[in-house]
Length: 164
Image (cartoon, rainbow, N blue to C red; front, side):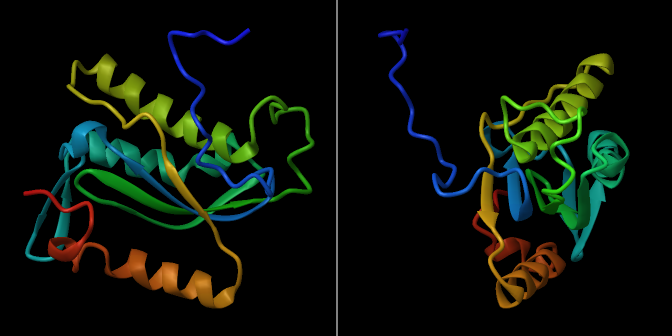
């Protein structure tokens, strides 16, 4: 039954894909694009404690989700970019929920972990409600994304998420 108070939102996910296998370029922003994760000084990202924790959680996502690999990522002042590789052959294992896609479970787990850390340490923090994903379709697409991630800190002043 639909709730008339809240209109049905169109999903930002591609309707031709189930997100339970494949390679994805994911961007997750902080609430109001606030600089919770740190600042960039002299083309180097200086992480806050919550930025360090977020980085550690990204690096250990495969420990919690064995069907997932994060070959590259960058933590920026107000967002995170990651390449998330989901092994579709392993998403049918009992540890993978069936009501949500494997990708949304992984992103939700990361967001939850960082939020709980902030609460436990009485830190002001919040994520944007959704995340952006792009299905990596081929090698050229993947190489462009890898170059973008590698250069994200250096090109911060021209980044679409840049705020001073």
